[in-house]
Image 1 (cartoon, rainbow, N blue to C red):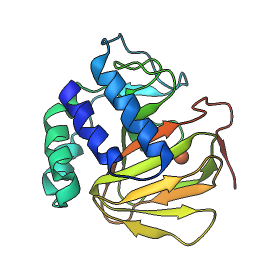
Image 2 (cartoon, rainbow, N blue to C red):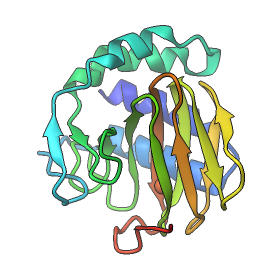
Image 3 (cartoon, rainbow, N blue to C red):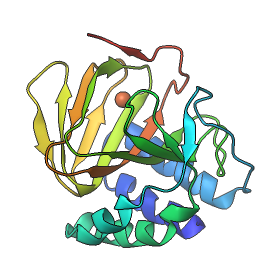
Length: 194
Ligand SMILES: [Fe+2]
């Protein structure tokens, strides 16, 4: 698994935003650290679930050069990750790999995977953490600051500064993203903004 963390770090090292450098640093530190018992990373009523089986198909399909190595690596390890059904996006699934309460502990960053099913809207919301998404497989649309949705494909990066209102949606197929939170990663500011 440390190899996975180093591989994920590379996807952030090539980005220029300061939040990306913090994410890469957190992944390096986590890879060098000890493995911990996991707890529910968001301490909500979210339910631990089996690894989403659709990931096999999704990860087998990606062809973007920048993320194909990540996709094949994830195809071999996603069953070992701790998956939860997201209470905020009822049909979404996430696995926090690095962060408070995760197998790879880090007090100031969260890094994980997020999978949205087809035909899903995760509505406008905001939080204090700086957030980065890297699309790994499938595609999804993002709206930042209530602007029109823009489609993102494997290898694309979405930078969401602290407190920016944002939403995402899928259309005909599911999408798998790598995500990170840095800065203020507490949960107290998270809210939907309808
Ligand atoms: Fe977010």
